[in-house]
Amino acid sequence: MLAVLTSGALVGVEAVPVTVEINTNQTGDFKLVVVGLPDTAVKESTDRVLSAINNTGGRISFTRTVINLAPGDLRKVGPLYDLPIALGLLASEGDQLDPARLDGWLIAGELSLTGATRPIPGGLALARLCKSLNLKGVLLPPESAAEAALVEGVRVHAVGSLGEAWLFLSGRKELPAVPPPPAADPAAPDDPFAQDFSEIKGQHSLRRAVEVAVAGGHNLLIIGPPGSGKSMISKRLPTIMPEPSLDEFLEILAVHSAAGISLPGGVTRRERPFRSPHHTISDVGLLGGGSIPGPGEISLAHNGVLFLDELPEFKRSALEVMRQPLEDGDVSISRSAGKITLPASFMLVAAMNPCPCGYLGDPRRECRCSPPQVQRYRSRLSGPLLDRIDIHIEAPAVSIEELRTAKPGETSAAVRGRVRSCREHQGRRFKGMAKVHCNARMSHALIQKHCAISADLGGLLQQAMEQLNLSARAFDRILKVARTIADLAGSEAIQSPHLMEAIQYRSLDRQVFY
Image (cartoon, rainbow, N blue to C red):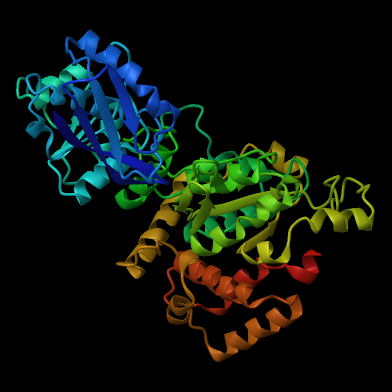
């Protein structure tokens, strides 16, 4: 007897439909054959499925059975087909589960030998697929169902075991739909160990640059000697980041779900990701890929922050692969298994020393580096990569007097309030534009529309461009930063102080930087 049901396969961070066809013959030796380009985990599923069915109280005929996973040219990866295969085998018997009851449901889940379900990656993507196919609903393990319930307009049922799914589909048990989880407050003021901007001593210009960068989503490079607070202030960026919208959070969750990684706050706390990979990371680890292409660090930082400490210590090849994602907001990966496009719209925050020993320009410590050593160290960063970093800021060493002061700095809550207001203003400005949520993502056409400056300011900018030998890309980025500074000041037009501040954030560029 033939049983047909619908499941899905992950391709990047999206799901595509997979039809599970199970045909049981009446004659022949007992054998389960899985076809449709399955990987090892899928081939091994037959042993898990047989044990799960036996421990659930079901039975199958000891005949030759063919399990086809269509389309046949798409590689099937992972154990998410355990549950649909088990239900299909029960339905193929006819007297245990009516095959017609499988119609309209998207089913996925891993099974244990006892028949209990285990979570699978991509629950959110499968719910989106169910919605696009206009199916009745989706059956998933409880952990995966929690994130799938965030997709509006999709009936999501959490099944804790094969037996529970069997009873539900046969009409012998009611299974309520999983409600969307309530959004939790992203702030945690009651946490005594929470990091806060008030702990930063001095560094007023650096704090200002960080606020401008976060308010507009601009890339930031911090240069300073050891102990100047580069890492300390960078790791407090999440405390001033505005909470993502529901659409942005679903994009974040989709990437992490496809990678099989849980968000620190779960599906209820809407927070932007903060990724901080070590400088020994490989090109594939940073960009994404592998034999089965999957998300890398730049995609896991989507709609959040990618922090690269000790930037020149990263492999040059790893840094150069970021150039295209920094410009386009996504990354395309081609492998023998196929080509995928992953989201990678992140804010890059990087920190570095001014020289190998770290004390170039420090009035209290002598630099031991020769000019060729300094040149080789700084030349690890290419000009095209620096062009894509909007703000370059120096972090001078903090004096002992500043460290001893008991007066705390401005709190994260105060900074976050200004950043949130600025981002809300940008949201209204770019309403209806899918890929533009902040000033840093403006296209050239949007720059011309929203960053118009007077003739006098145009002359000032031209003079700065010639003196600093800046590129055309840097020209656009100065205007974007000036637009953000004007937004923080509540000004509809870019004025001279806004442009001057934006220009001085490029003071480490090109000839001056090298």
